[in-house]
Amino acid sequence: MKYLLIFAFVAKFAVEAGADCGVVPMTEWSGSASLRKTPLPGPVNIVIIQHAVTPTCATDVDCQNFVNAIRQYQMGKLHFDDIGPSFLVGDNGKVYEGAGWDLVGAHTLGYNNRAIGISFIGEFTDKLPSAEAMEAAKNLIACGVDQKHLTADYHLVGHRQLTLTQSPGDALQKEIQSWPHWLDNAKETLN
Image (cartoon, rainbow, N blue to C red; front, side, top):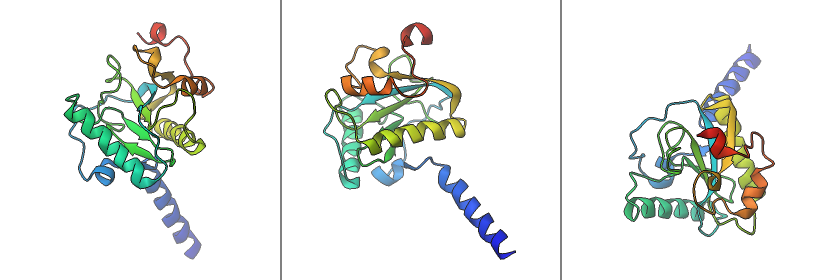
């Protein structure tokens, strides 16, 4: 009986801990909840990979500072309702909540209400994000499928495939072409 109770406790904790996909909530990194209100109808079938065109961050403090700076810039200068990406990934291997799974973000014009935008903190034209960051993004996507935020047959694309931008950078664009669910002819297929 003792082992059954321990197993039940561990199983319950594992389910609860996995419910957020290991994401650092916005309330933790910013001290406030999202100002976005429009629900994202899900599950969605598009994952858009981007880069933030900032320096990279390797520590929790640096990454939280960059995510806050991105939020302030997008709200103050660009007049967004809140931070644009659904999620941001630091070189520390942590994922930070933006609009999250449930709210429409502002990451890719024409796709915000039907896609998740994952932005790597840094600029990845000539180098890749850390192995920890790429693993965190892959785990986030897998968790999104497991929790039915993403369809099992989702499409993975680079930001540049859908709009006029260099994002996610040449090196990262080449890397994600080897990831599961990569879609080469994105504009033709997704429009």
